Image (tube, rainbow, N blue to C red; front, side):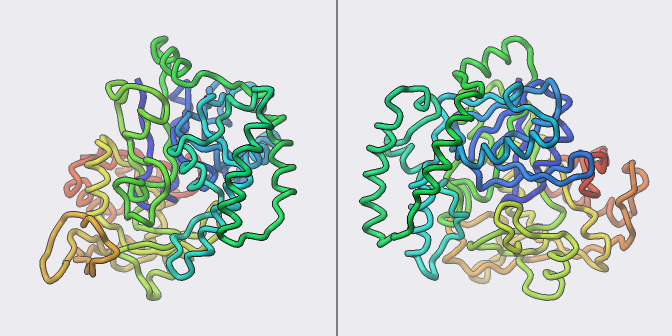
Length: 423
């Protein structure tokens, strides 16, 4: 069976640490979508490392890590990560596999991403400029190159053919940057990739499941960035929800068992797009400062606000969430009052549904206020010892969502996880 771990907000929920925490319980950690726009932060031996494409189970010896076919893979980023991980004494050649159907991000995809975003002016969607969108466009347009293609002796010819097509598009944007250096890095990185385990991903994962192996599917970004169900057009280019596991790994829906949804104790968003509970005041700045809310991939300051239970309830519904992991609860330690958004006021009417188009709708969040616990929870090991006000905050979220908060992260360390009864 497969358990799924994914984000319930706009990404940056702290999934990397949580996957790392659960990894010892699984035989295989598999990424099923997204690209190097993801930034999963881990602390290994007290040292911070950010993974963008390699699954977060890579530091657990004996755990197989699979990059699934739903991912778009940048060989250059992969090589840099490979070297970072090697510095910790981990050899990716032993426990990293890549599905041969995984699409490649080419240097021209990165150029197209940059050219397209620049052309939009004030209507930018906040792309990370990693080439993800153009790579997925080539996938759906049936033009893309895949990992299995790099083993073909005619790969360079295939690359040049696609590059010429991209160049016409770049010319139409007036893009003049020289990407020769990008291409040199790309072909150098392919030499490393050819030394890794390239597998038939769907047969591989189903064979492992048939042998009784436990799989954890690791999601990137967050549910509110899903290309179909997120805050379109300010979304990513893949299906970030649990349904993406089936298409991204090649497994049947009945293979999925638990769906663990990760949410912060408050809410953040990077880049443009609607954010109903965003705070533009000192409270928002305090959340950003205390929570060190800067993008792991881009370094951009994150927009901060109160937790949004309307959006969370929507995310739990479309994902079939069975358990919730709440991260960064300790960031709220110093607040006198905490607000929780329980409904939206739209055109003078109160509603509890996420509207089809948030950008064309004036949304006023309606809050319920709780007393803050105003004490340091970072050293607490058991749920029984957390402050009463925090228990009330968690209990209300449990009741509102109808899904138990089973784990609470109270600090960046791997051991800083409190098990909750989740009632």
